[in-house]
Length: 462
Image 1 (cartoon, rainbow, N blue to C red):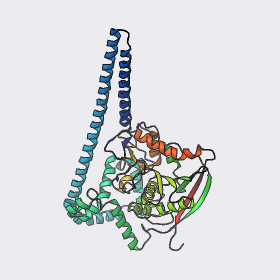
Image 2: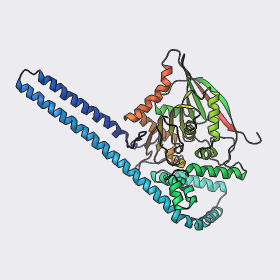
Image 3: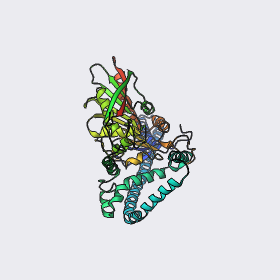
Image 4: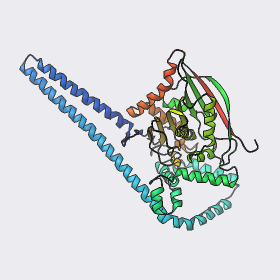
């Protein structure tokens, strides 16, 4: 768990240009209520003035009435000014970012692509030569690189590195287009016809044509491994804790007499980053296939588990996922094949997934976690997007695990702060997600059944 003062929660309310910290969003309705209460006091003073027994008392009450209305007006103007300033800042930042993105993509295609054609082959040959000349076996070299990354976590744990990853991912196919006009028109900062998903799809296609097991999808099969009674979760942190680490998919069935069953599906993160598609479906292959918008092994396995658990296309379901599990949850929600009542994800590269209108919930990510950036820019959604920096500048970054800002304990710290958030944007989503499960269990005869599933890839020889 991060042992430092956390950075503030930044909240992107759905369908709004307004982006602000949780504290600011919480203070704005407080100012509104204060203005209303002060104005109500003014009205009460006016009524008392009508019944005052003396002219002196009536004059005092009239003065109170006047000052109350003036104060209420000042409070409302203060609230409007704060909101307008934040809105202007957010709009200016978005405009500047959009212009910067288009200009940088244009410059990359116009200036860097010719240089890359000349330099990349030599850089590749130089890197290959350095690898072979370095002392030790290949395994020792990989271990040395891993140790260096662990000892220097600041290299990849920063908003700047996250932004760089996002630009590389979103600009990869724009770069291939080459022509600056085509790049600006078709790229992610134009019509959006090219982007991270297209790059991932091309990579998957090339891997499939190569005829090897590298980044190549396979059939999957799912086993039901455990069942038992359960309880409804309360809050974001508890839902995130229920995301499985090993068994890949956990499904809770909520039943109540006379009501159709409801379900919460929790989906695990990546289990292996090996590019070879062996027995584990929660792998690098599924990550790339999922970002490409194709049916990855982990997506297909989760849907098989959902069907086994009795989830029908019309069953109400909430999806909760972390890392690749969040990408799986986004993809299932975006497929339109399921009746998704809520969607809660943490640190996932599913920002580029198009979701149907009306799907509410939370999308949580760290600005110094580069994994979400690998999925491309965030598409417009009806969910509340919550961001924060896991390790601010003064924080000591852990060196015992890779990508510290992406670790589950870092997101659990953020989830606990989300549970304590005061802004109505976050509170409304938490209440809806909590009520989805609690509503049935508070009724007579209501119960919860938990099922766990494991999946494996089926090779050609299986």
